[in-house]
Image (cartoon, rainbow, N blue to C red; front, side, top):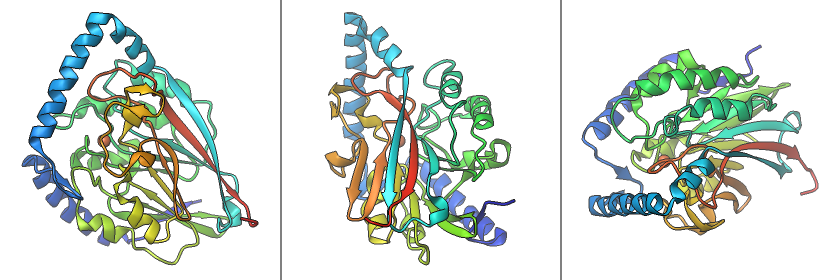
Amino acid sequence: MQTWRFLNDEATRREFRLFWAAQRSVLESLHYLNRKSGRKSRRRWDIFLFLLRLFGFLLKLTGLYRKGYGNAKTIKTTHITLEYSNLPPAFDSFTILHLSDLHIDSIPGFAAIIIKKIKNLRFDICLLTGDYRKDIHGLFNHILKPMYALANYIQASYGTFAVLGNHDTWLMSRYEKETGINLLVNESVEIEKEGQKILITGTDDPYYYYTEMALMSLQTKGYDFKIALVHTPELAREAAANGYNLYLCGHTHGGQICLKEGLPILSHQYEGKQFNAGLWELGVMKGYTSRGVGVSGMPVRFNCPAEIVLITLKKNPSL
Ligand SMILES: [Fe+2]
């Protein structure tokens, strides 16, 4: 039995996709990084890369690199329960596996490490919030094999849905059928259980590839319970204003390298400290920023463990 359906019909989706692919391919090929709050500063990025190299050199010099690499390969499972009064009763105890920032090629054999963590988990749906490869540009064929391997283990009864991140390319959208991972590009899917429905909307990445199509996709009405999937926390306020109940994102890696837990040296987001990692609230909307599964920049983590997240939705009428 089909447990989900896209809101738009096949012909409309195809037309939308063509328009989006043309637009994103131009942005990608020109390296025109379009942030929601304006164009990115190239100088700031160059300074970051210089500091990163310097930091890597110091880590190797002090012998801490090996420790950080070991940390990056150790993934925690975070279990959280979120209660809502408006959750359709059929979705009580519905469980989401949230995976973000896989960067599956950042560590050799990383897919096998992730599979080992998830293969005994029980979940109803899997939601991925972007960044599947290590690099920002260039080839991505080498991630297909590990992504296929991982996809084999995330067969969820209510489907697997994903959005793209700033490390991803529009070309990845051509591999949906092989992986069974359904990409949501500024569109929504309806999940049905026992005749009751919830909505999941996924947007294109707003960190590098923001367009107003992302905002428009968050304006769907007519559902008691709505989940937004966005690579970054950048659209949280818009999602809350449009009646979303849960907002899942990543991108920050929780800082990846922290002085102590929750205190990152650098954070690639400008929305405020509360959105850096973990659970947060905006009005009645709850959000979760994953620390991510993988790593980028340097394959190390300090005071900021990698995580896969299991979220159980609970109905609580007394809230
Ligand atoms: Fe990212």
